[in-house]
Amino acid sequence: MVFIDQEFHWSISWTVGKLSNTQWVQRVLHVVREVGYAHYTNWGPKTTFFEPAIREAIPIARLTHTHRQALQRIASSTEVYFPNGRWNCQDWVIEVLRQAVDEGLISVCQNASLAAARQ
Image (cartoon, rainbow, N blue to C red):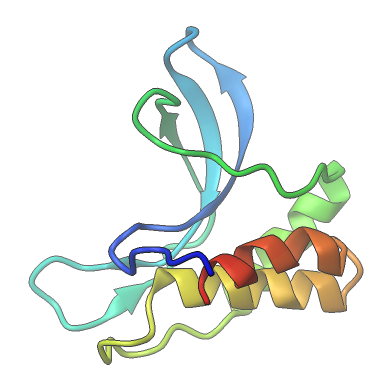
C-alpha cells in the first residue's frame, strides 16, 4: 500500500511553453487554501511557471486541445468543499479526473494510479 502525504499539493497541468531548461510555462487547474481564510478557492485555469527541479510531475494522459478545453470546463464546474481536515486539493483532482473518465477524456487506467496512491 502506498501512502501519500495529505500535505502535498496536487494540481492538473500541462506545458504550454519553456522559458529555459529550468523554467516551463504551465496551464494549471487546482484549488488552493487561502492563507488566513477557512476555505478553498478554485480561481479557474491559470498560466504560471513550473520548475521541474522542485516539483514532481506525474504524466497521466496526452490530450488534444479540445480535450484540454473540456478538462478546464470540468475543473471550473467541480465543487470545492469547505476545509474539514479530510477533504483537500487531492480529492478535488481525483474528482476532476473521475469526471474526465466519465466523459471519455482519459481512461480508467490513467486515473486509477492516482486514486490508488491515496489509499
